[in-house]
Image 1 (cartoon, rainbow, N blue to C red):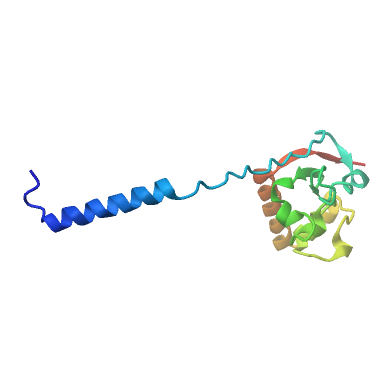
Image 2: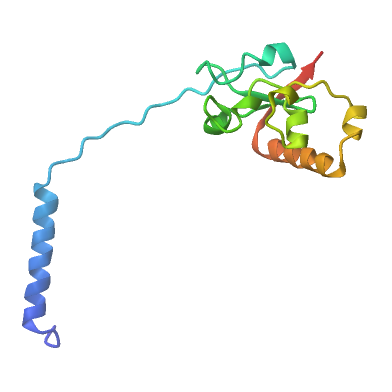
Length: 150
């Protein structure tokens, strides 16, 4: 039936299969290490004051990470490596980042800057466009928690 295959090739394949099976059968079983289940922080979807969201910076593992932008509060806990302690955008965590995002600024003086629709009208066209793009980015990727209350 397999006369067209040289006998040496059949023996070579047979030896390879036997070696593979011996390796599989005789190798020690790998220890199963279950992955650690991380509990997602629980919070209430509601309106928060700027003072209240200061507690949501990612320092406390049991609390989520919030960022406020133009009156809306977003839960960014899913990107803890970015917004949590040591992350490149940690400055924004637990704060109103509206002015920072509009100006592409990482200056602490721009965090929690009071803003109004009038003051946002005074931004340059590029800054307005930047802020709009950031709002779209957050709206698409993160859960809206609530609004900033006075």
